[in-house]
Amino acid sequence: MQTQVFDLRDTKRPQKEVDDQIEAAARILREGGLVGIPTETVYGLAANGLDPDAVRKIYVAKGRPSDNPMILTVSGAQWLTRYCVDVPPIAYELARRFWPGPLTLILKRNPIVPDVTTGGLDTVAMRCPNHPVTLAIIREAGIPVAAPSANTSGRPSCTTAQDVLEDMNGKIEGVVDGGPCSVGVESTILDLTVNPPRLLRPGGLPLEDLEAVVGLIEVDHAVTKPLKEGEQPKAPGMKYRHYAPEAPVTVVTGAPARSAQEIVHRMTPTSGVICFEEFEELFAGHEVHVLGKTGDKVTQAQRVFDALRTFDESSVTEIFAQCPDNRGLGLAINNRLKKAAGFHVIDADDSSVVLGITGGTGAGKTSALHAIEMLGGTVFDCDAIYHEMLKSDENLKNAIIGVFGNIFDEDGTLNRKKLGEMVFSNKDRLDQLNEIIYRFVRPEILRRLEGGDGRLYAIDAISLIEGGLDQFCDCTVAVTSPMELRVRRVMARDNIEEQYARLRISAQKSDDYFREKCDCELENAAETVETFEKEALRFFTKLIDRIKEEKQHAGKE
Image (cartoon, one colour):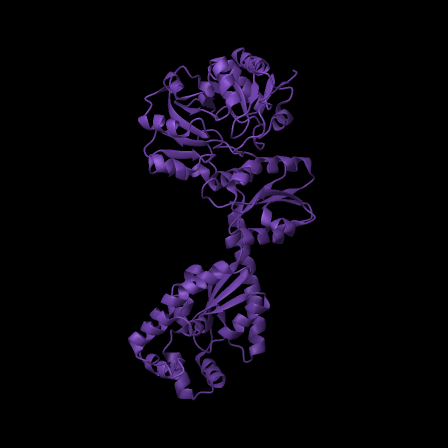
């Protein structure tokens, strides 16, 4: 079969020539043939939506599963009553606001629409595209057209007529070249047969815009994860691995700088990368396709399918893709990339390992933390951060004065010994101090974690559990040690008498408490610092490897 190309990009050509090509494309559709048509989202593969034999040709040309429903494309809201029943008023309001445009509505089906078009469902998907050429073809044909994306099933969607020819040349009668698509991702699909309405596929119309008209909209679970075995799709693109190039794709989510660094860490010489413009230089020497700037989701949507398709012309063995957040058009881009990856996703914000280190005074936390630093980790010492904040945070300082009185020296420095004598012999007073400290320190720790660019962090806090810092940690570690060893260490470290050392230790939680509350224990019975640091280094190396393996496994599920 020879595929004819109707070039309608040039709007300055004689009107009769344009009309003749539109009529020729419409004739193919009326006679049961297939035509690739342009829309503002992606190119569609059109057939007479009321002709079961013509619609079956789409399934054959695309290699599309027969239970994957199609969209019925029309030229305006006046067509709804012909092919739908019990149309709710909100459908007409949405059509008035957003048609022509990238919005598909799921409505109850009129029996005139054949089963093969709806995938056997009792609902039908209706859309009016915002492209003058395609609207003219539909009006000329006088029929609604079934028009899924014009790519081979499973491959990235087509955003140019050339893309359509790559997949469909010789399989279909014609392709209408209306220029590149302005939106670049398929239409948003909203199910109006349920209450509240449900988003089945994010697309070129952001969810936020729909909610401004409709109110509450539920997001179907298929938007963020694959359908279960045997579960029937309610709309196109919900069930099957979709938009995929030949090389396997891994999507890396999270803060852009972190996701870029995560890709650098994972890539091999044969890896390809889809990245934001700001990070292109990090991947020099690799096959790279730029989505656009991190905040330019319009450009990202226009480029995402082209980036995926172009890799099939290269020799890359795997593709890593940075991913925008879910706001606005980002939800649709995010969804398409994850579909291309078969939902193989790595969260770069979770790629770092955060350990919580706790235990009583003299147990050996300092040596344990030094071992973490030897592994490249960043340590957040909560006590040091607390005293640092005392110099600049008047609210923290006033909170302490309000409970314990003015225990600051004339130069504004906290009198630690005076405060210690007040709290170490009184559990309630110690609890009061800890509540104040962690009320202020907790958000500061979170800020530093979010702003960091490292891969390993340790939070050092005696009151790690009580202060709520364990919620930031992948694993909490209790550092324990026999009492007499602790007493000797505290005396030598702080140059204090035995009685005060025992007072300080007795005011804290027991080792049994830390063992019970923490995920694992690192016992320090070593006589020298050097011996314990070596033991701690081995312990943390194994622990970090295990945590990373667990995260990697979770990302593949």
